[in-house]
Image 1 (spheres, rainbow, N blue to C red):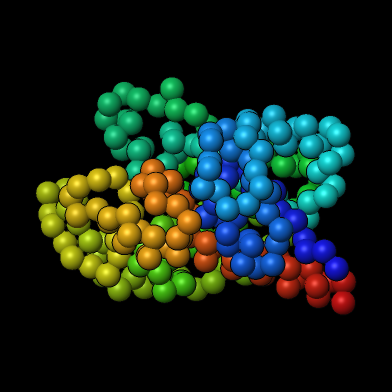
Image 2 (cartoon, one colour):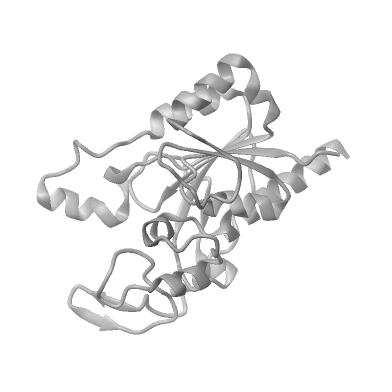
Amino acid sequence: MSRPRVLDLFSCAGGAGWGYHLAGFQVDGCDVADRPRYPFPYHRGDALDYLAHLIATGEIARYTLVHASPPCQAGCALTVGTNASQGWGGEHEDLVAPTRALLDASGLPYVMEQPNGKAKIRKDLTLCGEMFGLGVLRHRNFELGRFGVLQPTHPRHRGYVRGHRHGVRRDGPYLAAYGKGGGKATVPEMQAAMGITWTDAREELTEAIPPAFTRWIGTAFLTARQEVFA
């Protein structure tokens, strides 16, 4: 029996894809950038054009689930304050709404992921690294289409994120897996903290979803699906 297949859109380096792989899916990625370290087959091109093509040709039927992490820099918590103070925002790409429209048109269950911030997605699920014993917090919100999962309990954080913030230096059990300097995590630290070993590109690691997040989602999805067809 073939494994269920997930389409990983805006796939970046494959953090989300690896989690689905661990949950039992076959994974195909799509990203507009060259991703030589992506650990699964992938299509290089515009993710929305590719999804529209798969829908129009009926090829989308080979998938069981679609995951999308569209860019929305204007709504990201790490950039909202800076953007406002600098008068920025208009030039930032927000593909949430057009992505949702195509995900709905696909007819498939879907997952749309965004960093914690002002992105206009339903927060059907919020995950944090502390839920999985990770060395990063990496809060992420997920909009779930055509299926649902229970929200796990959000444990109290055990301390601070290590590094400088607003002129104050703090130590803590979590790494700042973004940017450089000011106590930010090194590449080996980020790899270990998130469970990502196949890329050592800092830019890819700073954008990555910890695979534990999508492993949890994928496992919950497949478990519910098996119960329906049992």
